[in-house]
Image 1: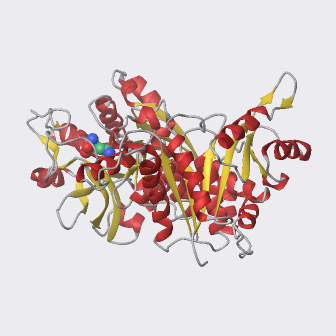
Image 2: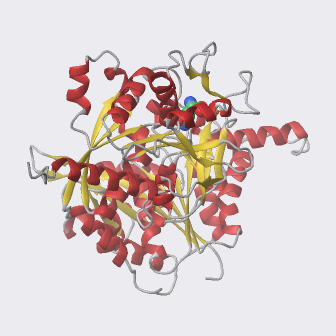
Image 3: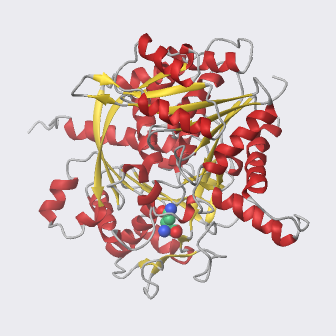
Length: 551
Ligand code: GLN
């Protein structure tokens, strides 16, 4: 294509209607036709990035290859499109204002009064165009966070109005995602909230081109025509977005509704190849038709909010489809484990085929995580520890195998006599919290013969990071002597990236975050390996004991 075209996705009526999934699904459909697509998220909050946000606020903080801490929707974009996003794909009001204010301090505005229009909107527009100007994409999809009508969203909607005008006809479109509520008592689907939401957009000077209507029940033609009439769109531009049992079904549902066709038509892009979703369909088939079943315990301290572990949950789904195995995830609150008797602990963890200990920050729930790890180690249950989960595995081993009773991370006990996890070089207590961790992709060399090597099938990998503390190399020899080995290292800094217990069926702790790189088309090797191990150990346990002795 000669130049980039833009699709803006706005939301109305209510939040949490799934703009991220609609954007990712459209991206997938266009990509499956051979177009080069990227998706960007504009978040209206004033934080510079979600890195400093408590996971209870906005769910998981997703990390890109280039080390940007971003909204979890970027995870969906990567998982659906199987392509990397970057810092440029994630914009917040905080970052926009920071840039404009820095420029003002430098005197770049030459004495002008700095205002929302044009200075803030110019910066927003520049951030949207920037992705198109790389020349890497035929289509840039920009998802505007929040709901139309929010005070915070106004500058973004205004920027869309200006951009639509500047880009000219057929170079940009707006898809507005709304809700069609169902009234049980009268058995009716109601269109008024959608009409009102479109009116609100019109007040800001933006006419949506396509309406994606989230609904519990199918929209008939009559209803689509009614919405079309009231909202100045053609009936074919009213797209039903019905509730799906898995988010991975949405691209197929959108294809059925011909969303991609309508988008291409509105953007004047002559028919590209037909969508090829064969592999996607295979994934869905395997997901829906499992031939085995296991139960994995996910131990964390934010388990009340499943979004806090979004990428981990999705990585488990990708790997489960790979094995055509139904993985039931038991969400276990680490604090709940802390005061359990041995018997109660057995009851909670004994039936699990695998235990995954999640990443995290701060001391709350640490002792529960350590208890879960001890159980996995002693009962030979396959274990995957991610970031803090790996650090806790190191602490557990030091305390209960090596015998250093007060071993700890200096994050939780700065006066421990055995600080087996400590501050990384270049980090300090005086440091600002925002964007100062070890972030993004780093190389890791893997030892041949390890479980990690078996999983990856190679000895050099690259994975994304988000941490401040690390394995304390002073103790490396002691750990090795007692049976825990470092099987992965960062070659430049000798940081320990992976620890394993070779005498255990599958005990792997990783300092990095494999979950960020798992996609539908490329399920992550470590999650594949973990589920494989859980399946194998389960089979072994179930196999009848054959007594060959002749006595
Ligand atoms: N709190 C730990 C650190 O900063 C682990 C971080 C994480 O799990 N992402 O190193």
